[in-house]
Length: 168
Length: 284
Image (cartoon, rainbow over all chains, first blue to last red; front, top):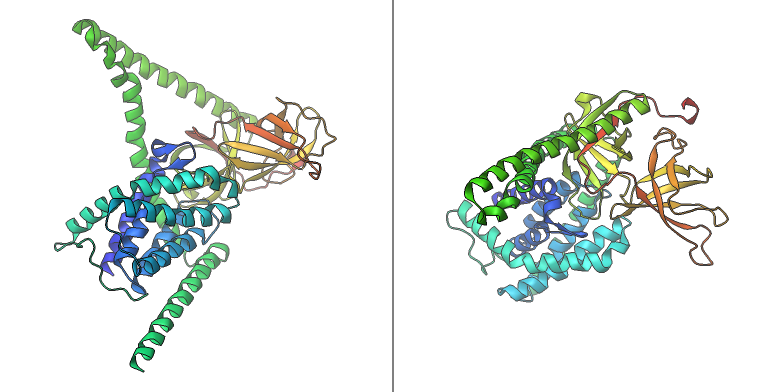
């Protein structure tokens, strides 16, 4: 519960920064985004069923700051979370290059749901894929930031690579 | 046997979670479309809180931009005489401030002109934040229900139409810009009165849809609001035609790109027309 609230707080801080300073982080039609890596990072550490609640919270928060059709962010992030829960039972993802590939792959799912759902399917190529790649490339940095921040908040910290338990 | 029970329990949990997720999504969608009376106060509180944070964060960015324009970018002259450099920096800083004031003045004059041109009560607002999706064109402005702003109100900027209010909390409002894929405005070409719908096309551009192939459209034609959508008053400049294509044989209509008169990517201030009545064509 506490960790879920922390994840939502991280998400909210990222949302405020991204929406207030958005143009600073924008290159063409892509922008630095910490929310997809946050969902991936959180998904790795927090299993179902409790973990999904924070992800739904993140989706609802995102929708409040976007003109996207209702439910899209919630659907995209929930999909990403379920995918990462499935993947986390089959692979280990400890090195940076693995995180890059994984988050790029998950970003394609998120960008596809958002762009197709909002009627902007033409955004998918090339910008959507570029966005997914950018998310992936920056994922090790974000994972590092989230690890450090959560270690700072919880005295014991979340030890990387050790999962609470995995059920699904 | 035990193994099978554990497995089916896991499967049941997974199905239950999926069902809850789907249910929650539908609940969220329902709340967005249905009566928002229950969630409105929380939602509006959230929008207000975020608006203040966005405003607080975007202000240093502007100051930083001004500082960069007026001081830091001038550090190249450091190789020259120190006294001269300081003098140049001081003067440039001053010029930068004057230039900023001059640009702001021109912008505000245009906004004032727009306000007078429309002839309806209007309020000016500053942009506090942008949409989190880079391809979506929505901005948050620092005026809300307290200032009389309501969803559906027309938003203008220096040279013409910028968009319309989507949602407003007590102190902040969300504005859907013309270039958003979900935006549509009834319009016509000023020269030949050919009617169409201006739809958002992303990347700060729009399309004039539903103009038949037989209609003569030229690059540079002014596209203005027709007023038939009962949202935008008639005669406001939307933009100019920047490209015209016939499209394929199966296409019934021309493919017309319209570049909005307002630079929607760099919008800083807007004017919101505050009116309780929808704009009807006959009124203008």
